[in-house]
Length: 435
Picture 1 (cartoon, rainbow, N blue to C red):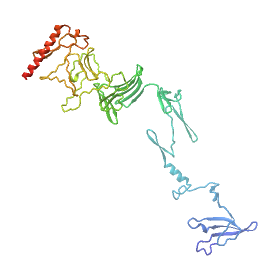
Picture 2 (cartoon, helix red, strand yellow):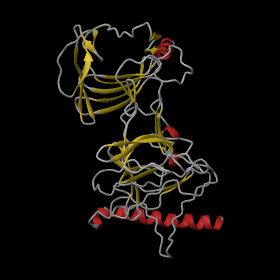
Picture 3 (cartoon, rainbow, N blue to C red):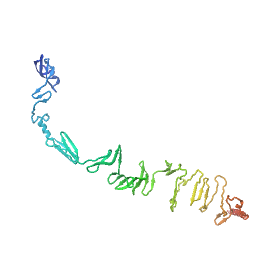
Picture 4 (cartoon, rainbow, N blue to C red):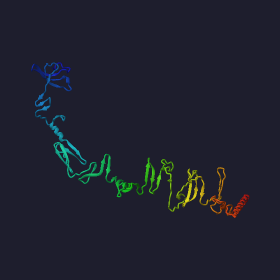
């Protein structure tokens, strides 16, 4: 079958004939179709005599001593030299043993490291406190031993009651919520601590500590009052949008950075804006003291003060559109000055104009008649005094006298009034001549 194989297209081998139910051909050949890179040799039986190629009907197997070359199974002992030709030679027990002897197993724990020589040492897993180990075949069992025991409640966090006993911690878990049965302390060292607890009086308390000193605490007492307390030397600052809104300093002063709205003034546009619309009888503002007050000017009980000489705005503006009095000054329960809703002013005492050359001007702004009335409530005299000169010029009696007898009680009194009017006229004439 090797004849004329210049192109490597022929199978190469030998064959012979046998008689088994007819003539058969058996042999061994090189399969030219496998190529020279990975040549294949076949053993088989065919019914057609090979020429340039072998067509086997049945392929056979090769048995060499105890080796079945088809399955690769040894049926007897195989001896291989102790020193292989190369390290890649397979199935060399001597070579494999030498490689295992040269290897070890590195191990490490939470602390410390070690190595096990796989040829001569045993890797041992030892127990510790309350822990034992056992090995059976390829299984290592680690057992907890000793006095670790205890009972617990479902959903409670477990804690060590002592070195050997587990029990419930005062923390119950329900879903994503945790309930603490006692105080809660969050300690970040000596610099800061947060405590949540109930004090001896039964008040719920949230305290912030700094260097073991309580600086700030929030307290909800048993009467449902809520307190915010800053420690000694600490100011309380409330900020919004990254800026300070309210500062309560250590002198109990409160400083607002913006306007203050009270009542219905939800959007105040003045430093202090009070909207008392809902209250028909309640005062918008009330200033009271029962102390012996001695302050004056800016320390008066109520002080409105503007000392900029360039100011053109009004210092005090009072407006009342109803029928009640616009302004009342009262002392000891007695009104001293009343300005009613029509603008009439009633003084309970004297009116003094303190000026070097005072002028009392009675003038009508609407063009009507201007009247200056000087009256009396009894039979006392009404008079105008100018320096040392006193002119007794007339006597008036209030309109609530109902009869002429009450107005002029005698003919002599009427004569006196007439004479005084004459004297007044003479005085006016003389002053006019002198001027």
